[in-house]
Amino acid sequence: MSEPSYDVVIRGGTVATATDVFQADIGIRGETIAALGTGLPAGRSEIEAGGKLVLPGGVDAHAHIEQLSAAGIMNADTWESATASAAFGGTTTVIAFAAQHVGGDLARVVADYSALAARGALVDYAFHLIVSDPTAKLLGEDLPALLGGGHGSVKAFMTYDRLRMQDEQMLDLMLAARSGGAMVCVHAENHGMIAWMGKRLVERGYLAPKFHAVSHPRASEAEAFDRLVAMATLVDQPVMIFHVSTREGAEAVRRARGAGHKVFAETCPQYLFLTAEDLDRPGLEGAKWMCSPPPRTRDDQEALWQALALGDLQVVSSDHAPYGFDEAGKLSAGPNPTFKQVANGLPGLEWRMPLMFDAMVSGDRLGLCKFVELTATAPARLYNLPGKGSIAVGADADLGIWDPDRRVTLSDAGVHDRTGYTPYAGRTLTGWPTTVLRRGQVIVDGESLHAPPGSGRFLPRTGGDAARPTGRLAPEMDPARNFGATLL
Image: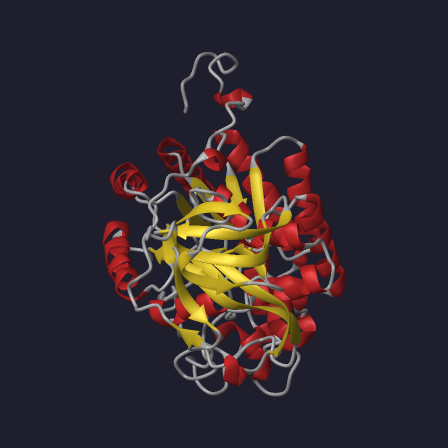
């Protein structure tokens, strides 16, 4: 009797990619997809997917996991708990942050963080390298070595006292990234506006969590985007703008891309489903909804959806930043903190894909293929993760089998991370991943988790095509137009 052709066959499902929806069986051999077709031969094991959707495992390219903040607060999740929550939500690949703090050694940070991930991760992963102290040694020695060692992106901040870079430092970092073929990702807000507003609010006694939303003027976003694009254009370095939250921010991205600049941008579920009004709750309860930038208005939500539809924004990431509502997290400054003393961030790894599915597929907003593109295919492509984010022969068998009719009401009791709450409690979503495979292995089956800690795999990568400079030099950087000066 001949051996089965496949280790696993997923049979009878409706398969969706970023471009197509079709009925097919999926044959998996080892860790990869070996065949797509109808009537495939039997496998060693079979998964019946009739009436279900078979989608690529999600790629969440913005998640803070087991990370110490610049204020010295450790977020609530370990690699094990965060990636378990990712798996339950249909996400099979994450990119998290190895974060340098001022005075820290980036190479040591990456080594220590790699050890944590290797011990705990349940899904596959890569890192963004947060740079907050761009010394000559870091730029000339440490960063080039790390970029060459499989880390294809760096992150910088234009705000936060302990993290922000001055414009000159940002240009230095962009040049180092350009030399190493890396993408530069940026939290872009005008620091001066935010610091000035925060101080003014506190001095006048406006201390409640809801005033956090007031302390980040919407103008601070678009101004910083324009400044960032100007710097990136000067040195011909592609950039990814994180967590766009306002209509004006989306318009700034649209202008930049329309002018031919190589600019990419993401938004997050909190900016599509929450507003500043969610922070307006009794006592300190609103602290649970504090993140930066803050949620805005319903008009901004509509503008962001339009930007996703037009392609101005290419990715929806969670910006998972899990701080518990306790003395170890949101209330680390004591039982009565001002909004300036509350740790910023929301949990979101588990609900990113179900929230988007409910809106885009069940709610018929942009549709199934666009859902796959925004949550899996585009982040895999932009961050150069070969084999991830799509369903194709030879791709990793990272798959979610979704029941499009299953209704789930989100609750604090149902979370799988360690934050202890969900900012979306009470929402009923239609559509949910019931079975999740990572590289051909079932890691979630209903409410059961089958992946051991450390079974996730590090994904070395370069910056890829998205990070490649355009070759269109600004006049000041072009030797043909700057009197022969070589500056790049």
